[in-house]
Image (cartoon, rainbow, N blue to C red; front, top):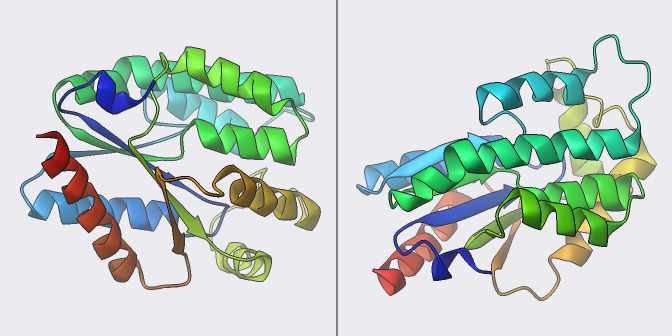
Length: 217
């Protein structure tokens, strides 16, 4: 069910893409742009949008003292984060009429654990639906980059690489295939060139969000 059918005043904006696409920088800039236009954005992320999620984020991304995490266990930890995230943060803010901008949502699990790890995408979608109370983004922004750009950006980072960034070239290829396949011919998805300056991308998306706000309100 679409979010707009059940939360009259709120909007959920998802920002998706492979590691290195610039999601986090874009999401922060988008929130600042909307705030400057007297809107009420709430910036969050998966995993890590809640205190519970921050603990799971550390396990999932850096896996201290975990030699091997089963792929099903990996996904279910993301699902647990997602359930808490929606119950504690996303849904309450949507009910208050806020524009929630989430750096990743359930689609990342379909791509990373489905296309990337080989789990059943339909089962992931089913559990995602349950964890989010059936709420879907009003708009998904997909920042598309190619394999070479992703690899170069990941390699240039100063911080410790995550478990997913260390997974290798074939894994990254599958992620790109996954996002491209998942977002083909979707009218609720904006596919943008992740090589463009962030300011240009933010301007495009802000215009689309303002159209959504005007149409609903």
